[in-house]
Length: 284
Image: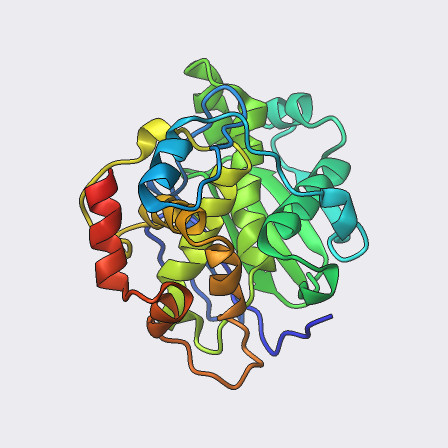
């Protein structure tokens, strides 16, 4: 199993900003623009090797089979504790949606690992996870304060989702896929240099698990604009160049002795990032 030399926190939300961190902790915040929203159930686009066909396939949600999560039971069953600070208020929505939250979080972690890795031995270990439910503005955040990972989810957001008629379980599950992907991805030696890739892979994981609507995929912009934009781009890339996301994650290994650069896109596909983005835009 890979050992991490250091862990970075992820306040995984689109458009992050360091929460801060004079006490030795740090993190990023999860915002709606970064992750999208559930669309009533899993959306699993058909796979294809050709770029245009790959994009067409991603429009046809619902038929992709997810990889076997049970193969990652040993590698991705973190120790979990839950502290619902608003159980008598908005947090009751969380308890209703997840009556066995510790077990549910472990199942999500296993699925995240199965999407990111081919072999359980590749997975970096996660510290114990403390999941906190509280009223705050936003969606969620993840950060590390040794010796644990803290994930916070907003019960105000849960209440807003319920008021809008959304499936609260799906909303929370999607956010947890994103946040746990940040936890389990490889940590580049200098995470800030590849931050948009790390967040984009997390958004891709959420989408492939079925918790982001294809309707939120828009043309224009740049892959570094926000995680959701990068996530849809990576999905197109992965379908045209199989295992591209796996290889992107592997390129972030902090122990490989290689400084990360955007040249990885050319290594994977034979085309540089600008060319690939132009191809993607033309296919939309």
